[in-house]
Image (cartoon, rainbow, N blue to C red; front, side, top):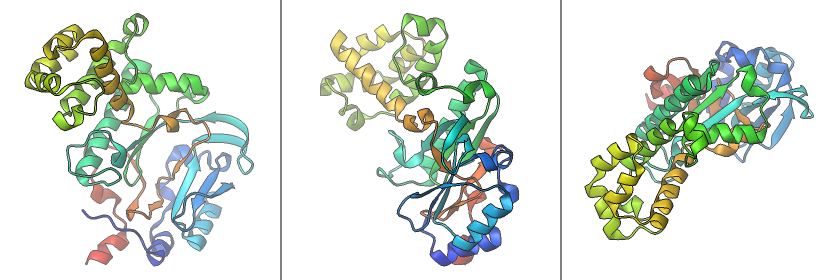
Length: 318
């Protein structure tokens, strides 16, 4: 499926004929007047910020009159969103963008997306949400398709008042973005780390491994020749066996782990998760860069890109 930029006329058609307030998720609809809205009016970025809408009808009127390039709403709730004052609480958000995945099985270059890498982003989003449910006891977790990937938005009361330091710890846990210590292993993090490490190592080839600091070509070839045994060692938590299989010394082994952990972390934009004042694309709005509808996804297992196609795309291609 080719993704093309929407024209101003197509944006106008979308917001006049297709945008529907019933596609706004309940967690946004019920807190609409407490959120800051931001707009990219011409494709140059979300520079038009500090907007507040007291009713969904006022929002609809704005969208139909301006037909913006992009629409954003804050993860934060404020007493005075038009001034970004009186912070109350913020959703915990994860941004898994297919164009920025550190490892892709498709041929997309950095900054490009296809159906295959969007599906890889979908599977990572499901994986992260499962960890938050089972390990962190979170329940109010929703997904939205963002045009080039997926957002996870968590609205449990216990999580929405967390500060940046605590949010950093959550994102490190969920992504497998820190090497376990004795304490984190005791808390169950070891299994999450092993799963993330195995997924990342499985996706590496010689070219990608060559970017790891300190890994000579002979070591890389040994690791790849023993890849299945190495994966099994990772899954069992026997990292010393992984070191032996590759013939890695202590310093090189640590550099290798640091490389894998960095790739784990790059599966999501951690700055989004820790930023309590972040704005994200509004589900129901148009991602004009790719002519796709940002939308709430109720069943991630069955999501298809066709679900997010605006009507004007079908008319354009007919």
